[in-house]
Length: 339
Image (cartoon, helix red, strand yellow):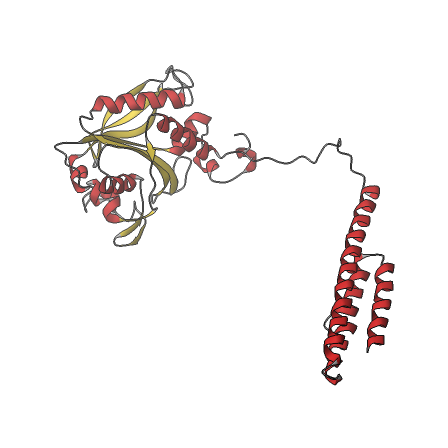
């Protein structure tokens, strides 16, 4: 058996030395060291040996195996190096040649507006709050002082999943959740998608985006609201932007107002963007209704607050001169690459 092992060693060393590529080297490895390799077969024959011969032959086989593994490893390194040198000689790369042009995307107009508004309010000390889009009706309506017979709760206006679960129709439920779990002072904005049962046209969509703001603290007044919105309008739409309030009604604010901004295209003179009126309707706002504060566990005798909210699409359409809201959702690259 010693002669057989010596013969295997001699033959395998010759074959390893003559291998020209990694495939042939692997074939040699399998032939001699694999599960059915010649050295493995020798080990299986050790059962016919005497007890005195077994350790001697076993040790010899292990020595040969170790040497072959070492030689194969060295040969593998040599072949890989030769292969790399061959590639370097034959595959010349011109590092000065211009690369293929990569088409770069751009940030969507809606995302641009959301990020811009977030930066403005973060600079004013606000925090960003988030909440579920599939919401309990108690947060979407009841805590916001919207009674059961209010038109907004009708199935023609709101998407119901069940009697008490809806797709949120505004981001106001986030405000309710924050007020319920956080003691004043509260200073947040709530960006996100909202859902209403509207038909799709140039100015309406069943899915759109809102950003709402809320401040609750002691001695908050309407003047704080107006000053905040004036600063926001100037930062977002230009330093010369003016703001005006028009009386309105929202169930969750009292008093309530619609806020208009002077047209940032014509400066209030009248143009196509502002429909010759000089003003553009921007958002709804008002002082937080005492019932809302009480519903969320805040003492309305001690604290007051203001809230506001606007559609992101409306800001984007006004700022970028977009006349049809559907363009913001159709993902037409010809349109989006303008931004």
